[in-house]
Length: 147
Image 1: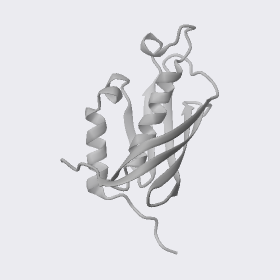
Image 2: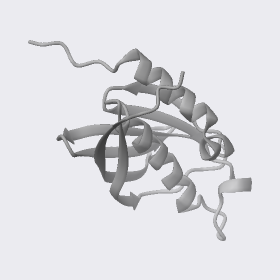
Image 3: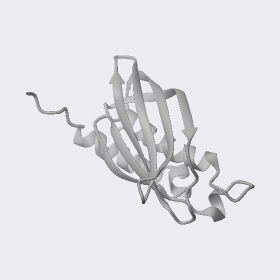
């Protein structure tokens, strides 16, 4: 049995550094907590003061931002720029105030030009917040390793 393919350490470092500088990730205080080949786990605390909708529940856009951050980082792990083609999100429940949420993106299929991801958002109690199926277009252009 062959060992699983690993992410190139330079690619991993470049993605981690890019997330630390990314304005949206910083404004939502998202943290990249795990990154492997075709996999990402991103954390965010739900702050109703800046992330609530008009009914006082978590805004779908805030949850989507967390999903998209996990999708973005997981889809770059092969070292080439990948851009979203489609994202289909189903919102299951709303987190309580100050709840930590995690989005986990897992690559389930990868071809030369596309890759498909399964993304789940859960909270501290492992309750499901949202699910997403997403597809990227793999451009073939290398990501910037500007370390």
